[in-house]
Length: 138
Length: 138
Length: 138
Image (cartoon, rainbow over all chains, first blue to last red; front, side, top):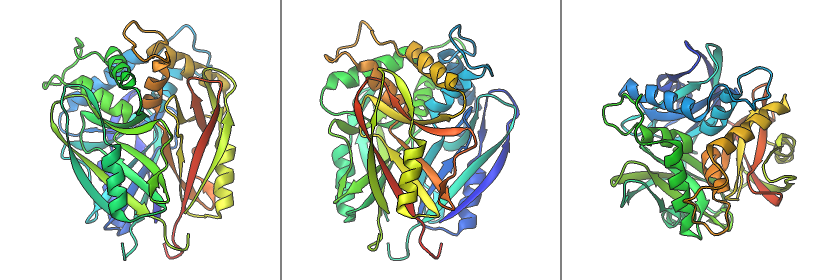
């Protein structure tokens, strides 16, 4: 079991940053062939999500619809920092994803990429990757 | 640690298909008594979720309310395939769930079932189940 | 690998109860130094989520916005118990979270706490914590 981390510089207030290559690199560094990887975001105004890696319009549409669902301003928001919407979206998407490994690779679907979801950027953010290797006899 | 997969044929455009029996079967086949199971959906317009297994009206209400939250058509959607709503719901529900095992069974609550959430069917879909057994001494 | 559980008495119909101390206690009792913890909620009208642990206004705003997104009454709800909104929110936030351990502690971010999300209380609820220790050689 190895735990590593990397940084993500998010370029805009709201964005989905493809971190698949960084996670795959952590898996490769671990040497694990079979097992699984846990990707964890230690922030409360961001999240991790898995979604389409081909057409960037999907990312545009997902972000825009999330902003429809969770408006940035609401008359009832009390949190002084003014970023409650980012906290709501963080809980909706969640801060961990678990993906199985096979032959040293993530078993993602053909169209799946792993994304860091930024809801209150731009910021420098951290991502923790834990790789759990299957025991030799398994 | 064993990784297996099974197929799900989803009968409608939007539906929640109970896959608890298939996941339990994968757990049984693994021989694991203690440990946990990761259920992973390798698709970007579908998800996995755990919810009530008793009254099918709950599934109806969940799907209908999700469609209220994420309308199929939005003037700002850019993705050419026209299924951006399915991608949004995929990220909202997520593509992995982790459930502990005890005495060879999933430790689901009395009213919990595991559901494949289809948001752009009908299609033939895959589900990956990874079972991690506790070491004998644990 | 150890599996334990604890109870949460939720004080209101909708609330977020900080269970970080209980999860950390389960980790400590397990003796695990490196590894990870899975927090699982075996209920279908509740969830587990990780969010800000500092300003309680964030919890207020998150709950209130979730109620905007998922109204308690909808003309199309069919479920006889009348708590379909709670089921929707349970699927949106999810019933499991996975957090890595380092030196016997959860690797939560500075501002992260683990919350039991109650959407149909007050009730007595259960939380299952599974702690997986890294093997000695890892």
